[in-house]
Amino acid sequence: MPAKDVYHDAVKNALIKDGWIITADPYPIKYEEVKLFADLAGEKTIAASREEKQIVIEIKSFLSRSPMRDFETALGQYLIYKAFLSLEHPEQELYLAIGEIIYEDFFQKIAIQLILAKYQVSLLVINMKNEEIVKWIS
Image (cartoon, helix red, strand yellow):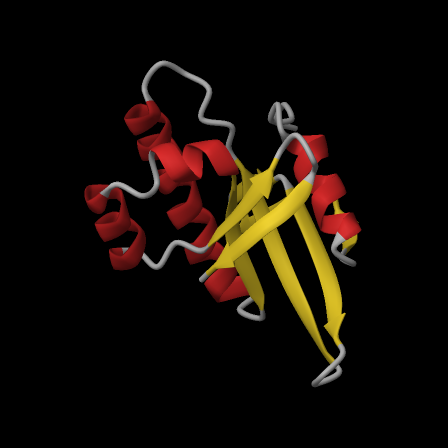
C-alpha cells in the first residue's frame, strides 16, 4: 500500500466536514493484472435529487521545489486512474485534491489551465489549515 500524502488527513477531514462519508481509505483500483490505490473514496446523497454521488480522490501536496515536475507526476497518475475507473466504475468521479495555495500560485497559470481543460482534470481545492473545501472544479 502506498504512503499517505502529507495532506491526507486534512483532505479527509474537509470531506467529512462537508457531509461526505468516506467509504475507502485507500481506494483500490483494479484493471486486469494492475492494482493501484487512490487515496480516498466517498459518497454523499444530494438532497435536491436524492441521488448518491460517488467520488474518488487522489491527494497531491506539491511540496517539492518543482511544481511542474509534481504536476507531471500527478497528471500521469490521474489519467491512469481515470482510464481504469471509466471502465470498471464509470459512476465514480475522480478528483485531484490540492491545497488552496498551490491552486492560486500554480494552477492559475495559463499553460496549466490549458492542460487541465484538455485532459478534463477535476480539482478539489482545500484550505489545508482550516481543513475546509474551498471549491470543486469539474
